[in-house]
Length: 430
Ligand SMILES: *Cc1c(COP(=O)(O)O)cnc(C)c1O
Image 1 (tube, rainbow, N blue to C red):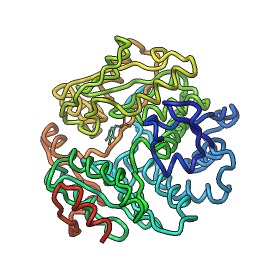
Image 2: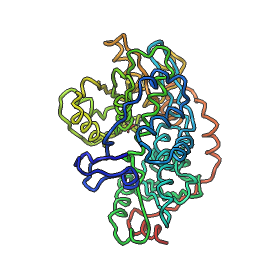
Image 3: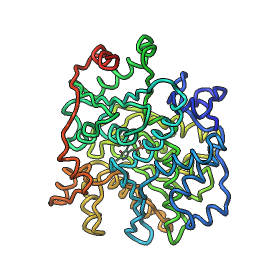
Image 4: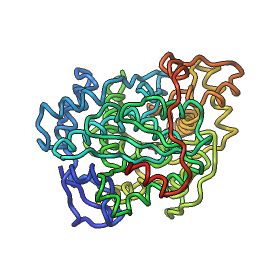
């Protein structure tokens, strides 16, 4: 499998380089040079395949024997080891639950796949690889669980002290083994700039091998296309299928575009955002105008300059498809989103998280003008990750799943450091 940089189509690399490096030097993003055209027989007979079989089939076509079949199978079966069920609210309105993984968010799919793939590529190296991640909360948990017990790889997570939720902190600090947490006396931006300094430090890089687990890594997008097929498979009526994607950096939506490009008959996408509405505004005006992000209750979508816009833009420019024919955008403010959390519970007896609630609002708005469509909302996280908000809106103490309860009794293990690069360097080289 080969990939090019969105900043230079002649900059072509093999999958291993794209995955291990994350980003090309020219600051573009890696895009596959080809998407396979999946056989119509496969799409027609999706119901006969398990989720893992679907994932394996797609990846083997995409990778084109870049990895031995047995190895690829092992990676897929370890990475995709939890379900993505559909819950139907109405005949034409469905929820795709993507939170059945270890960190209770869809990011588990990408993080697990990337970890297994990096673990495989790293086997031929003589020394261990250290993955450095700065997190404001969610990504760190998925990465920590994804890489847990991966031979030859250590993970160092930097998070801002006191600025992640208690639950998120538990996810970052209680796993142990090859996962270490650095509690930084500073902000998320400090954490990010410390990580950046490490990557620019030639002296450090002579001593240890480092890599990132950034959300822009192509290895995180590939597995996110699998569940579009898995969702489609579960529908009784698969005509006029529209996916509604609560979006921040637009990785999920980009993976959906990949699924469509590979032959899944998706009629349309809906980009659902909170007040951070750069893409919905772009779809209206044709002008891409990034702006500073604003804080909302669906905070995993508080993104003012979505990193995957470069991939979407590249895709629509190079295929000649027209973005407005594939994609509609809607944005909603927090008070409307809070209303939606209540509405979904009262109307359907379903507890939805704030991100899914933004998706619900967009789906409803879309159905008003397109009543023939069959809409699947991606529920990107379990509501317990945002328990305070959800409990306040619903007015009772919502049940938390067993696997979260277990976390609460575990002891936090972190190393406190100041927000200075020299402290990070000391830690990494000691
Ligand atoms: C990361 C995240 C999103 C945004 O996904 P993108 O792929 O960045 O658009 C939405 N919801 C939740 C819960 C997330 O963690």
